[in-house]
Amino acid sequence: MTQTQNPQNIVVVGGGIAGITTAWYLATHPKRPANSKITVIEGTKIAAGASGYSGGFLAKDWHGSATASERSGLS
Image (cartoon, rainbow, N blue to C red; front, top):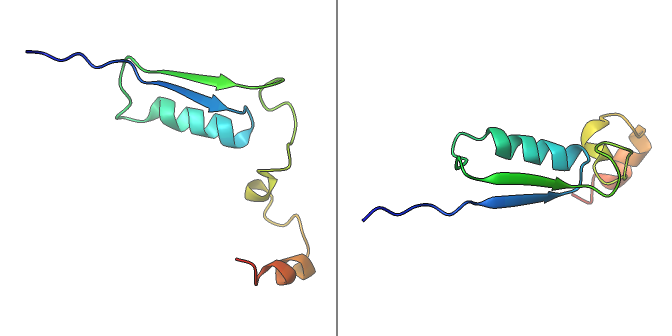
């Protein structure tokens, strides 16, 4: 008896840097089932503007040393 695999549909919410990177990674992953579908849901346009949530991952030096010192004890 042969089993057929049901499609695995994936929804990524948000078309910012984190969402689009996640969608790209999933789309290019070698173990992704051929019959799967990836959908990105975005409220406006892809990469339309900064939400402020992922900016810290991209801007290495967006703050001064005083900010880094204050936050160093939080992590």
